[in-house]
Length: 125
Image 1 (tube, rainbow, N blue to C red):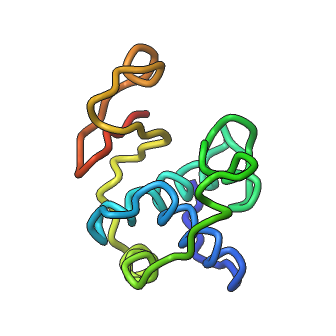
Image 2 (image 1 turned 120 degrees about the vertical axis):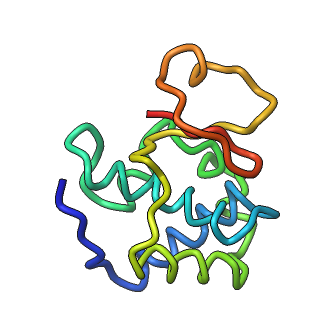
């Protein structure tokens, strides 16, 4: 995998928005983990090659559905701190491609390799 941090301001905004939509109320690290799931997918041959394509891939991130939280919320300072953390090389994602809320045992837990739990999310590969 080629780990490139070469993206533009719109990509940064999309990463911050998906972090807010998926992890509002989580710590900076929790938001960074959401960002890293997106980036892990971009860096993988198994998913689309751009941040935008990964975020908007059908049935992957529920907040991007019409009227979802992606469209109705703005990133807070913690989202941009999370982005800076990731850009600085922080990566505790263990290569996660998926996450789901804790307290749920959905498709992820039945079909994917569980990696770890952090904050309000469980992470999978």
